[in-house]
Amino acid sequence: MTSFSHLHVHTQYSILDGASNITHLIDKVKSMGMEAVAITDHGNMFGVKEFHACALKKGIKPVIGCEIYVAKRSIAEMTGKEDRSGDHLILLAKNMTGYKNLVKLVSLAWIKGFYYKPRIDKELLSRYKDGLIASSACLAGEIQNEILYGTMAGAEEALKSYQELFGDDFYLEIQRHETNDPEADRTAFPLQQKVIEAFRKLSAKFSVKIIATNDVHFINAEDAEAHDRLICINTAKDIDDPDRLRYSRQEYLKSEEEMRIIFSDIPEAVDNVSELVAKIEKYKLDHDPIMPDFELPEGYTDKDKYLRDLTYQGAKERWGTLTDEQRERIDFELDTIAKMGFP
Image 1 (tube, rainbow, N blue to C red):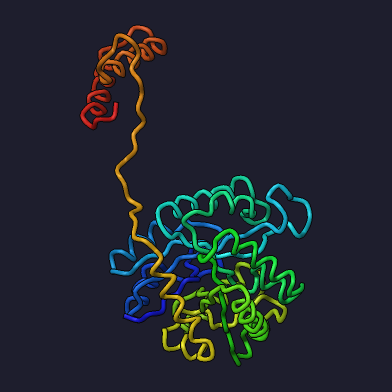
Image 2 (image 1 turned 60 degrees about the horizontal axis):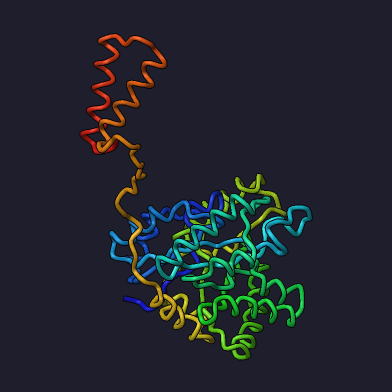
């Protein structure tokens, strides 16, 4: 087994953005000898159940996560342009407590925080942080944004805010998507290099570990062309539009050897991944059905009898005197419910 695992991965459930079929993704991870892989779709957990079951079946450790959007102000703010979307942050469930908190955060992002994108804020993060590991995500992360377009003082404050929330379970995440492909985006790499330079200083100053990821959006290198078409559909742009959104075409599931070559000057960023994966506990998502418990009113000790009385009471209110055919149908339905244990 290799010691590296991908912890920033978008499946086809990152709608019109990820192109990784879950079964094929797990098969590829297995073929490369990796022991674990994460799912971190944009703002949702639609693929988690399928991912978790498929990974366990193939002997791969599933790391359940999500790339969430953190509102720049508060989820209560839904007015300005700055309230659209938010800063990216990777959250990974360390245990069942973390899984439940991640479910809660993602649900609240859609129910309470949706404004162009499903958003949470740091107040919600502080409330539901237990059992979660966080990393700074891609160039769209808060700390990266401060490094590139703000100030180092701002970057430090942002880092400290996450460190206060997650302690040693917060990591600085780095990526390198160098390419010479004329059809690919070549603007990201120099920005990534600038972030890495700053992260190395922040890591030393605040004792925060760095991890290497590849922001996986498709499985194989040759899938880049298909993924490019997917982005055109997503952004409603023609393939020959010179100003359309492009990816670097490097966002595929790279081997540990490839990742170690890319980060040969920062080997600890690859090494630290296995430490993070070791923190992830095994837990089950399947459980027995949780049935409601109805209290019987006075005079009843049998649920079958109470349901039968309620049913006949309702039938008489609707139809008056019942026919033999109606009674036969009602009795058949009630007997079926009783046999299944669902009264």
